[in-house]
Length: 170
Image 1: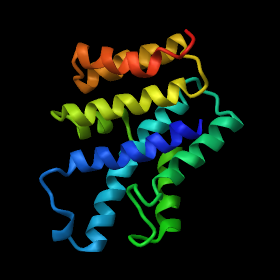
Image 2: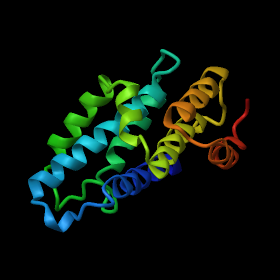
Image 3: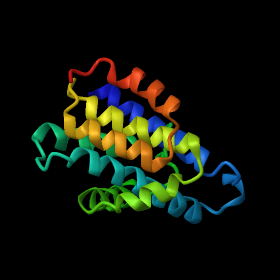
């Protein structure tokens, strides 16, 4: 599970970098940068929330994983390094977002026309679903729908599936 959490935190920063590839963080004031990153993090956390709550049950293990996932966004090499922001306030907002996530449509819109970002969002979902070593039919169906909605090519989906789903028990 810890590898999943570290990977999600790193993927969030990679996704943000892709999302803002035409922007230059040095040209933006700190408050605007934090707000921009916060809005992007809310999209990531919402995706994670939808994945974690798909089966309608929220176990203690999933709760711990959720806390770790959100905490991973505050690592030195992630979206909210300590020198950038008041981490407690941002964490509270992200926990609220996890409990009341953005609609899937908002997540899809964020990745619209950005194949790299779509692939990272799909990878996030794969990581979460396979964290317990299994993949249920309902999770597989969600992944298929997500890939389709994100506009992920069949080849990209297959490559990501091969990487993340091959170890999961169906």
